[in-house]
Image 1 (spheres, helix red, strand yellow):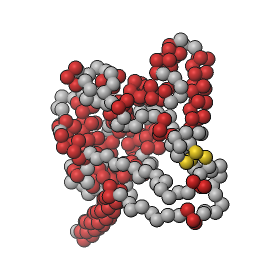
Image 2 (cartoon, one colour; image 1 turned 90 degrees about the vertical axis):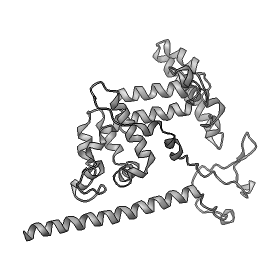
Image 3 (cartoon, helix red, strand yellow; image 1 turned 45 degrees about the horizontal axis):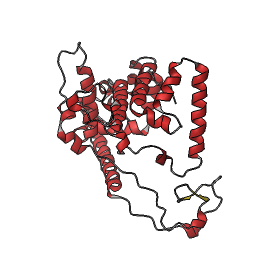
Image 4 (cartoon, one colour; image 1 turned 30 degrees about the vertical axis):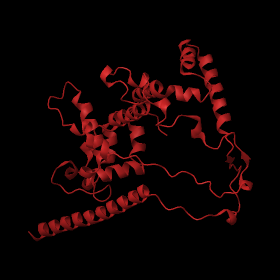
Amino acid sequence: LPPIPHKRRVKLEHALEAHAGDVFWNARGLTHEQAQAIRRKGSSAATEEMHANADALWYEKISTVDDAFSLAHAPDAANMMFTDDANSGADDALAGKQSRWDAVQEAFLRFYVAMLKEYRKFLPVEANGGTSQASWRGGNSDLRFQTEDFVLSQRPDFQPFLEELTSTQQFDDFITKRIYNAGNEPDVTFFDQSIDAKKNRSVLKFKKADTNFLHAASAHKKLSNYDAVLPNRNDVPSSACSKIGVNGRPVYQYPIWPEEFDTSLFGMPRPIPKNITAEFERRIALKAKLKARTKEIRAKRSMGDDATVSS
């Protein structure tokens, strides 16, 4: 992966260290305070030794358990909620309102806001409220997000990371939603207004943009959490497991990919949860809308070209 710009990386790491550092170090046999004390000594040898010992303990742990996530607190665990470090600098009236998990999410949000704060300048004109026809990222250059121009317009230390980011499927999906369905996508509205809020803090911006959605109760109602489907261990025979874990549950570990599958272990697939089928349906509908809109745009452009030739 390309390096993250140094300044942004330092800010992100500082936020993660402040709000989730003890989770990281506790899983490696140290407290947050012990790790900080070793760092304050300024000895590179001591710091390297601390990291080596911590990594060794971590790899030993994950090699002896089936579920690595059991080593750390869940996002909604009591240990992650209402901590002093998550609310440092907050007013007394607001204390206890932001969990550590919220603080970690906010740290990543601030990072991407800083990295993508100028992306809207490189959208098709129609996606920003203009009259020119807009399309997805394919086709003619004036109908798509100007990826190359966007990357080259950014600071040199931002460009390697942005070049990689803009080539991902996740970014493609975000741009598609931003062009075609921004008004109905609360996550897009939230992100765009987060960018506006950052720009509003500049003393050079005299006309402040509206960011009411960030503070509206509807934002919290519209933004949804999606739960991943948990692994199903029902009816899996104990003879198929490699050992029994410390929690008494069977552990399934195999040194290599099996050459043949044991068909006797096959079971009936579980029904797909409604929240996942809803996401599939949303993507299918968006894809159909994209195709129809692209066809309409090309037809209009073709009619315009014919009219120009006739005249």
